[in-house]
Length: 316
Image (tube, rainbow, N blue to C red; front, top):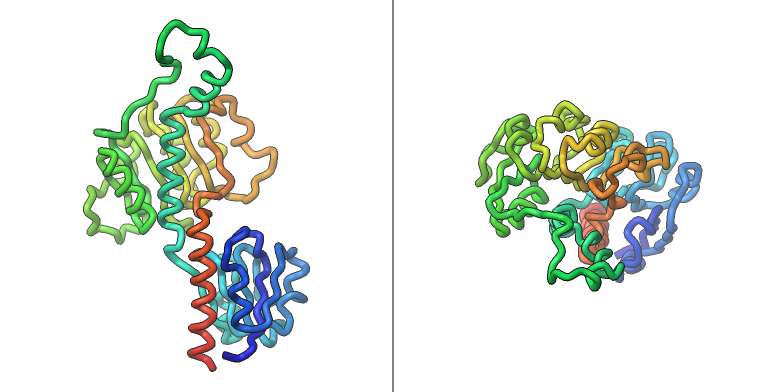
């Protein structure tokens, strides 16, 4: 294999994975922890392969990159690359799918259980000494309910949605789903309209892509259809849940709680509605981390590596 010129623009987005240096096997490999917009043009000049997770590669950058042959997106979504401009310049764009299915599903169930069980509350109760000072063997300060016999509604029954459904079903939950595209009609679970799913589900978990069908899909009016004891989970895409409306619904106790891992703007500003909620114990926030198990990140890098190898095998 020839000595190809490869650059990774934002390696910090995948962290300290054990196989990050594998690209050195393919040629001259340059790695940057992160790249500012004004640095992109200079850093990809004379490079044949660019690896990016979130760094945007627009039409002007693509037109000026005369040596560029392949853009590898170290993610599934490719909205940070001008695909039309790449096609015009005969530049191939590759992404990676299905590398984080188990990671996202595991975290989704984990944050659901945290909201249900309030481990933080009980942990603090014991460490504070309150448990040692009470006469009873138990403390029932926060009541929780079981998933067994409850309905979990999945919005977007793709690979991740199916894995979440599988885990919840193993815990005794009844699964229903809503297809945001209208094309998924052959699942093993009952398909409901969005309104019926929201009205009847104890847990609603979002695993849909962000597009014209799903943007602001869950606003205040839709959240108000959910039972007061229900829980909303979004480890799918920011922008599907109206953030200001959810903050309002949490403080008004329209729903019992929500766990959110994805946001319309990432990272979001300190003025964000989520940071202003009064009932913070009802809103569990994580920094877009559900995808990022060590196994998922390692697999992601391996798939990018395989994409590069396959490209040059086909274009040598």
